[in-house]
Amino acid sequence: MKIVTSLSFRGQCREAFEFYAKVLGGKITAAMPYSDAPPEMGADNPKYRDWLMHCWLDVGDQSLMGADMDTDWAPNVDRPKNGFDVTLHTDDIDQARRWFDGLKEGGKVVMDFDKTFWSPGYGSLIDRFGVPWMVNTHTGNGRE
Figure 1 (tube, rainbow, N blue to C red):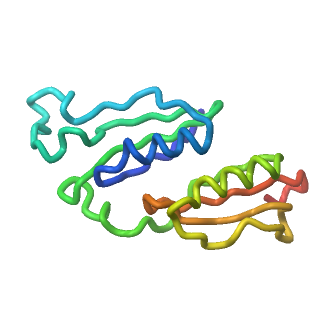
Figure 2: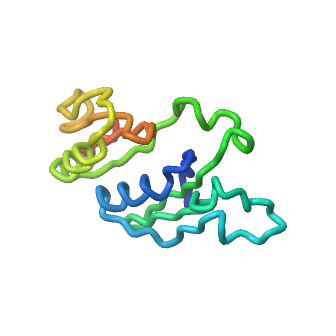
């Protein structure tokens, strides 16, 4: 079984996933624009021509999915993301810091990357696309 987070954007999916691929060292394996959809789907509005209806990013054995949505299809897509974080875990504190520093570029740091009582390196942020992230370094103590 694999649980995959799917992120929604408003015309920024391609830019976001190219950014994530660069920061996380992943590869985009699918990027299907609405312009490729069959005519009967009704996705022929020029506004959505270059928006992505499906995007898939592989990072190691993990994946992220994404799509561009408008408020007609996803009424809350224009509101701040709330109630979840995309979370990255590693036992390599230097890698964790690189991920954090890359993802915070143009975004907002919620909790700066630093030592905590549960981790030698943890930080949280909202990236420039409005997606909340947590980056955590494992300690092997079972509390992360």
